[in-house]
Length: 164
Image (cartoon, rainbow, N blue to C red; front, top):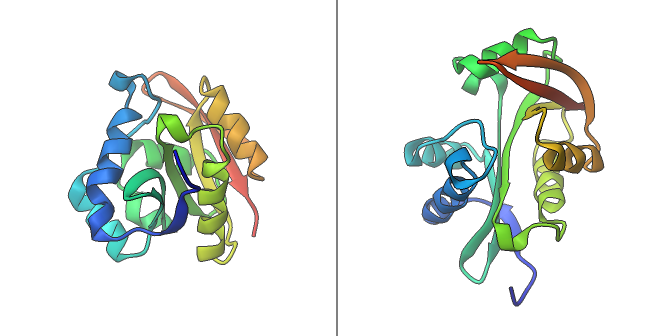
């Protein structure tokens, strides 16, 4: 890495790079993502301004997705999280993914800060696998607090929130 990545709203040209970072963070690749979104989903999210990316010399170094609750309320794991007692006015944060060679450099925090600014610091919630200690610690450093937990398909998750 030769420079600091620039952070901003994603464009359609970013989709291939976003998908590459997403695939590298899937469980079968050694990552901890709980979902896989399609190129079409990312295209729609980009059109709605729900994706922020970090770009470094034409490469996607990381991304964060965030949506209104309604946009994902049909997904079973989201339904389980919402029943766990999250704030009803909170939007959904995540996933946030950083390419391996950009980790531990503050990029996740920069993406989250840009997201919070874009969302006017509204209430936000997310869930993280209970065994993903690195992500849990990173989200606490970003200012989120543990609110509750839930189980879905035999896996324990922690719900984190940040107030407006």
